[in-house]
View 1 (cartoon, helix red, strand yellow):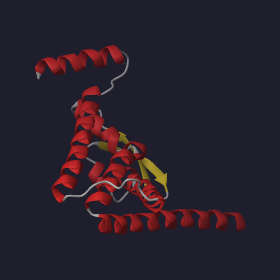
View 2 (view 1 turned 180 degrees about the vertical axis):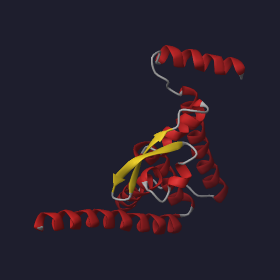
View 3 (view 1 turned 60 degrees about the vertical axis):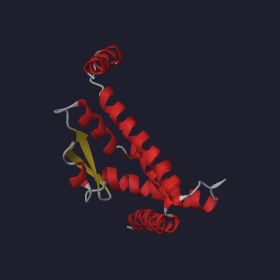
Length: 171
């Protein structure tokens, strides 16, 4: 294990000699993502479920919008900031109930890498989409219901922003 850590540290230094890049943290995150994928496949096999030959366009659209909303909710929403607080530091409001946060530099590279993951809606989207897609195989009714609620919330967000923009234009 020590040899692996030393190798990762060497590669990290060669990769970004003038900037700290938490490659070992990224490796842990990639390993966790792989474990998520393996767990979903194992769960499907245990339950005797198989992936559809071709996902329906309706499911793809529903999960796409739900992924967008849940990723932003987890990475940016003020209400979910206690989940990110051990890894981040509040920076500034980002408008529309969202926050900007900075990843804490103190602590391990693993904490830093996970901090980058949980503050990036684009990065989280891969995890959320994988979870929701796995949910369509393991628990399709519950996943569609949760995705419908997230999709309705995302549409509502866009309508709220459009309403505010229209109101400002009239004023």
